Length: 173
Image (cartoon, rainbow, N blue to C red; front, top):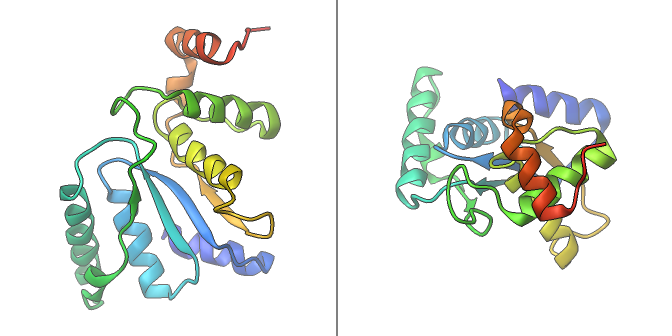
């Protein structure tokens, strides 16, 4: 359903993104997005950003879940052969632990877009997107989508505020 909604919104806007970035933990989101993209024949690349280790078992889990969901929909399980990619470069020390790049992304998103990210999940996905822009992997002409998958309650903790202050110099006004 999420891919159908995204594809509809992109079509209505006349936008064809190169990539869709999203945080990927146990790989359920990845399974659904990959299956949806496979069934709809979308032209964009899915770029999952791992927030924890566990490859290649998690990719196999995503393949299995996508194939099972395809079966429930009455579709073939050819999705097993689809590209299931998860970028492992932004995990940091592990699950539930923020990274400096993620905290920078969290603060940048809040300041420039009024977008609230959590410090250990969606912030890592946006950190990947930012790193790819800065490195030139994505060009100014590329259209990308950042899929916000939640986690906002973690931003409301004193620990998150302290991490932001220590890492970025942010001061609560």
